[in-house]
Structures are given as C-alpha cells and as structure tokens.
Image (cartoon, rainbow, N blue to C red; front, side, top):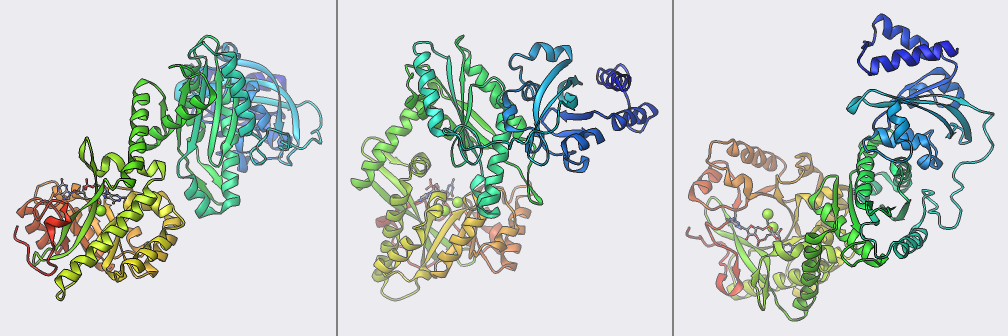
Length: 597
Ligand code: C2E
Ligand code: MG
Ligand code: MG
C-alpha cells in the first residue's frame, strides 16, 4: 500500500508541476484514478476555494460521506468540524485560498506536511486522524490533497456542544459578549501601538431576502455554513465571532503593527470561501458580504471607536455594492464626520421645517396635458441653500430618519394635491406621485402610515401613486411583494421607479401588483440616437402595455425625445422639457390642460 501511495503521490505532484501532464482518460490518468480509487486510505482533494474535487472509497468508508455527496461540495459544510479553524488543515486550506498565513507556510511551500487532526464523521462524531497533506499545482489550479487514516474508532463525543458560556448557540462561534471582552483586552494590551489591533466587521448582503424567502430554519442553516467557512478562512486571526443577526466579527492583533494587512489577508480568504454557493435544501445560495476594517490608529484606541469605525467602513462598502471591503482611514473619517454632521442637522431640519417639496408635472404624451405631479424633496439649508435629495436621502435612510421624513413628505404632498383640487373646484383631478425608499418599505408601520395620512387629508387613494425604485424592490423581493400587496389593498397606485437601472427582470413587472413603470432617464436620453435606445424603450412599453401597465418616461428634455415617445406609444412623460421641479406656488397645475413645451 505504501508503494501505491508513493506512486500516486508522485504522479500527482509531477502532474501538478507540469513535468508530466496527465490528461483525464489517458493511460496515466486512468492508472492514477485506479490508484486513488483502490487506495485503502482516505484520499481527499480540495481545490483552492475549499470545494471537494476527489473523494475515494477509503474516504467513504472512513468518514461515512459518499463520493456523490462530497464531490463539488464545500468542505466546511460537512467533514471539517469547527474545531479545525486553527488546525494545520484549516490553515493549509486557507493558505491555498490565496494568502500566506500562519505557522505552516514554510511547510506548505515544501509541498507536504505530516498532520494529525480531528475530522467529522457523517454521523456527527469527531474522528482523530493522521496523514499527510500535499499541495498540488500553482496559482488558480492550486489544491490540497490529503491521505488520511483514522487513528482509532470514532469517539463518541458529539461535535460543537455550543453551550459553553460566551458561545453563540446557533453557530458555535464566540458570541458578542466574548468578542467585546477579547477586544477590550486587546485594545488595552496594545494601547499606544498603532496598527496592532484590527476589528473586522462582516455583514452578509441579501441575507434578509434569503431568510424571508426560504424560511428561518434554512436561514439559520446558511448562517451556520457561513460560520464554518469563516472558521476555515480564519487562519491566524485571533477570534471570529457572531455579533448577531447576519453580522460577524473578527479580531486581529499584531504587535508589529501589521494587523491591517493581516486583516486584509483574512478578508481575501473570506471572499474565497464565500465564493462557492451554500447548499440549502435543493437550492444553492450565493452570498456576498460587505466588510469594514478599523485599526487602532488616529487616536482611536478604545473598543467603542473601533467598532463604530468598522461599522462606518462596512456601510461604505455596502453602498459600493458587491463583495466590498473598506478600511476606516482618513478619508472615511472625514466622510463619517460629514455624515454625522448631516445626520445631526437633518434632525433639526425636520424640527425647524427646513424640508420642503418641489413638484414636477407628469404629462400625457399624446396631448401634452398635465395628469399629475411628482413630489420631490428639497432641504432648504440655512447656509447651503437648496440641497438636492441625493445628498441627504442616503443619510436619512441609514439613520432611520427617512421614516419620519417620509411620513412628512406623504402628508404634505397629499394635502397639497387636495388644495389644488379644491382651488380648481371642478374639472379633472390629477394624481400625486410620492417616492418611498427601501427603508420605508421595510418599516412594518408603512401601510398604517399611508392609511392614516389618506384618512387625515381626505385624499381619495386612487389619486396617490407610490413610487418604489427597482433596486429597493429587488433587495428583498419576497418581503416587498407582501408590503406592496397591502398598499395596493388600500386603493393607491404603485409605480416602479428608475426602471432599467437595477437587476431588471422583466418578469417582476408581472409579479408585483404594479400600475405604472417609470423608464429611467438613462434610456430616455438615448432616444432618437443610433444606439438601440429606441428598441429598449419600445420593448419595455410593449411589455408593460401587454401587462396592463402604464409607462412614464423620465427625464424628457427634447422635442425629439417626445416625438419618439409618441411614436412608441408611451403614455406619460416627465422632464425639463415641460418643467423642472418647482415649489408649489410656482406650479398651480391645471390637470387636463395642455402644457406648452
Ligand atoms: P426620481 O424619483 O427618479 O426623480 C426624478 C429625478 O430626476 C429628480 O431628481 C428630478 O429633478 C430629475 N429630473 C426630472 N426631469 C429631469 C430631466 O429632464 N433631466 C434631468 N437631468 N433630470 C430630471 P431629484 O429631485 O434630485 O431627486 C432624485 C431622487 O431622489 C429621486 O429620483 C428620488 O429617488 C429621490 N427622492 C426625491 N424625493 C424623495 C422623497 O421625498 N423621498 C424619497 N425616499 N426619495 C426621494
Ligand atoms: Mg420618482
Ligand atoms: Mg426615477
């Protein structure tokens, strides 16, 4: 057997070095497959992202997991138990995922390592094993292969008691309290030594959507998988903890002042281990994370500062989207101070009535008559003048201030339309379009708020259109659907705003109870040019009409665009061609009357 192993080993490593490339199905390839298959030891090979690529009969017999179950699966989801994060195997896998890490680096480059480690049997028991690890290939093709032999019978010790104090009961990671205690200790021990403590805060993107659409128990399973993967990526990180919900924390200390670099290396490994999908029931979930890193620099030595900075950096990463990482530094510090100042004065703005609404007409394309207005918020800042929403809505969203601000906008806009209707006495009525942000859709009180405001202002619900951006809908489509249906039941109309800028899935037009599609001005801008812009808008209009929805073109600025929209049978248009958003006093819309452009 020893000879077999040595032979397989030699074939493998020479293949990996490219000295002797073995094609699958070739004579050598078949010989190698036979050697591996017939080897009584467990032979396991794992690629650089932690996915099992080889699992022989010896491994089936030794660990109880079948080849079918294991090939293609993520190693930490099954037989690597959580105690392995700090084991050589964990380190080695972490090492092959890209970054150099920890005490085994030297042996890794030698290509082989004697190991003893605990693995998990399929029945949940821990198994002491010994064997040899070999690093195969290079770069993207790098993998780790292991010949493993159980040292004795599986121990009857259940894995992960997870009931120790300081342990998160779901994932078995350290819990919030344990993390804070460690952090306090590290911060005190390294005070005055900048760059020696790094706090890494990791927040899963779209986890809420997974939880809502798949149910909480499957959601819990996903969190456990993520925890296992973080442990696998941990390497020389001091501590990995679950902070609560879908937030995880790591603590990195380095007396040499290199904690920042080591934190970044950890994050690189995390990105790698999260890049393979997490199996959930019959489906697979892909999760990105947003990561913020904070270092004990800039006079910020105490745990509260470090956590706040990591959080600020994480939010910035989240705003940038994708798997994002930000380190809290001077520019972010300024941005954060700016954000805090904005948040602070926004509080006062609400109290001091510095917020105001401008209105922009929505025009019927064929006859150029006004059919409604969109309410757009402005901040009449005592020093800065009119501040556009893009500068403060994101802050309002993050701080939660959007909830009272949004309610104020709704009430103000509904009241205004009622006033206009009263002034016009008779004649056609128009509609008021109000923007709702993602955070408002998440707010459990939103339906009640809309209902109360309609009741208070007396505006008939069919005169109110609520606009929700495509990206807000897509954040958590399942939850949004429930809220939209309840709003719809109140009798208001619903519009999807900035259509075409999110992850457009045309099928969502049918799934949500929508009345109106607002085509983003990016596409309107292309109209009449030779870039295929007409075709896109035309396709959206045809589909929307087929589904019984009306279409508003946003950002119409030229006669030519209007002409094209007319030819494409677009229903409504909005844009500077008709009017910029203006204060109520300058508008006095006359619904049903033709607007001269
Ligand atoms: P939106 O709802 O898509 O509003 C249209 C934006 O396009 C407005 O920008 C408007 O001034 C601008 N616009 C209209 N016609 C034209 C045009 O012909 N050319 C160009 N270049 N721009 C045009 P604004 O007022 O800066 O608002 C930006 C965004 O802020 C809005 O996009 C909306 O998403 C958000 N917003 C505005 N008011 C509120 C509010 O009360 N609550 C919430 N949650 N969001 C709001
Ligand atoms: Mg809008
Ligand atoms: Mg829009």
